[in-house]
Length: 435
Image (cartoon, rainbow, N blue to C red; front, side, top):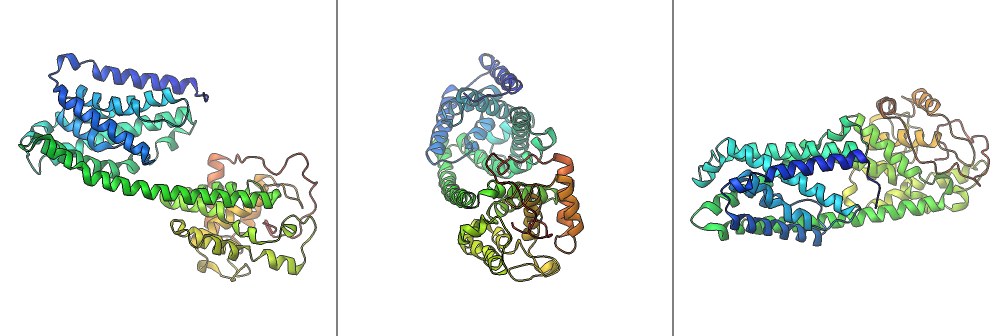
C-alpha cells in the first residue's frame, strides 16, 4: 500500500464523517426509495461504463438529476453505490473509494440543499421555464465549489502542493463540463416529473452517453500519443547518456515560465510537451558525436545542428502538439539572428520556441555534462540575464527568474552519478552550446 500522509487520511476521515452526517436525516425525510434506487443504479452503471471506456471522471447528469428531484439526504445516497463500486487502479484502493464516495455525497447534498432553498423543486414539478434554470444554476455553482474546495484540500495535504496552487483554477476548470451535465440533469428531472415519466427522462442519457464515448475515444488517442512521446524521450536519453532526464527538466522549466507568463492551462501543457520533445531530433544524430568528450569540429557541429529539423519531421504528424512543433524546430534560434536552423530574429521566432530556448539553456548550464561541471542556479540565471536581448527573450528570462525565486528548482539528479567521466573545459562560451 502506497504511503499516504497521516494528515491526508485524517482529512478523508473528516469528509467521510460529513458524508455520513448528510445521510442521518433520511429516516425523518419522506423519501421515494424506488427513485433513489433507480438513480443510484443508473449512476453505478455509468461509472462502470466509464471504467470500461477508460474515461476519467464521473457522469454528473444522474447525480445532479438526483439533486433536482430528491431531498438532500436522499440525493446524497444516490452517489454512494457508484463511487464505492467503481474500479480504482491506484493504491490504496479502499481509501480512494471512500474519498470519492464522501466527496460526491457532500457535493450532491450541498447542490440539492441549494436547489431546494431557492425553490427549485417546485419549479421542476411545475416545469416552470425559464425560472427553473435559476435554481439549477445555483445548484451547479454550489456543486462545483464544494468539489473544488475538497479537491484542493486533498491536493494540499496528500501531494504537499502549496495551498495557493492547490486551489488555483480548480473551480474554473470544472465549471464548464459540470454546467453541461447540470443542464442534462435538469432535463432529466423535468421529464421525470412530467406525464411521460422516468422512461422519457432516461432518453436524455442517450446523446450524453454518445458524446461521452466520443470524448473517451479522444482521450484514448491522446494517451497513445503520450505513450509515443515517452518512448521517444527514453530513446533520446539512452542515446545521449549525459543528458538523461534533461528533456523532462526542460519540460518542467518551460511549464514554470508559461505559468509565470499567465498562459492558460491548455497552452501550459503544450509548452511542457515542447520542452520534453525539444531534443527528439538527436535520434538522427550519430551517437559518437553526442558522446564525444572533446571539442567538435565545424563539420561535426553542423551535423548536430540538424537535430531541430530532424525533430520537427518526427513530431510533425502529432496534431495535438500544436505550437510545440514550432518550438522543436526553432528552440536554437537567437534574437540577434545568429541561431539555427534558419537564423530567425526577434519576433520571427515563435513564442513557444523562445520559452523552450531559455528552459533548455538553464537546464544545460545547471546539469553536469561530459565537458564541464554544472553551474549553480544563481550563476546560470546571471548568464541568462547577460544574454537576454541578444540570444534570449528578456520576458522569458524574467519569468524564469521570478518562478525560481517563488518555487525554487528541485530537479532529479541524473547525470552526476558514479562512473561519469570528470568534466572538461567548456567548448564554447555560449550558454549550453552542446545542448
